[in-house]
Amino acid sequence: MKSYQVSLPNLPQPFLLLPIEGGHFHLGDEHGDLHDGCRPVHPVMVGDFYMGQFPMTQAVWKAVMNGENSSGFPGDDRPVERVSWEDAQEFIKQLNKLTKLSRPVNHFYRLPTEAEWEYAARGGKYHAEGYKYAGSDRLKDVGWFNENSGNETKSVGLKYPNQLGLYDMSGNVYEWCEDDWHDNYDGAPNDGKAWMDRPQRGSFRVYRGGSWFGDARGCRVSFRDFHSPGYRDYYLGFRLASSPQ
Image 1: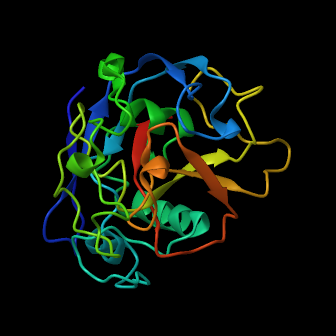
Image 2: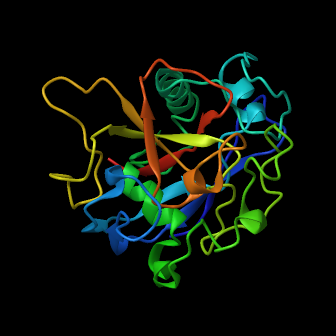
């Protein structure tokens, strides 16, 4: 697997998706300062996929969404925020249309599943290092949160990346995942796929990663939270994933 660039007509520079080699890991946390939603810890097998090097920036958002930008902290290199899960889905729909002839064969852009997100944040196949945050046990080295953000988002990529070269997975903005929210992992799939209620989807969606607004606890790789799919706020953004379908 190799990384690949995504180019758009109105985007000065392409953005990068990095290859994430799949593998086994244990999803969740039994021993940290987390709530019951992160339990029980259970083994999961994640397949190969790609993930955005950065959270989605406002420059890319505007290039896809005809210049629209509802972010509360404007800046092309800052993460887009004040976007709902539904907004992210509309962006992805438009991006897939725009890149129909340039995507790798049979690949489509989407939100990451919750299992993919945590696997990548932990460092993928390097997850045995067991960091609390994405790339370090020292949050100030890898993330923006309420102790160092100055009450605003920051341009992506200013902190150290994790073991896979992914930036800002702890802090800056929370990132929507594809999954419906469940109060804990009882009954969760072990194949890395999104956990979606059938035949009707649940009332809430998962987001991950902590934010500029929150504390260190919310930036841990295991921490999870939720809101309704139409909810927008200054601390909510997203990151792209891609894989064959």
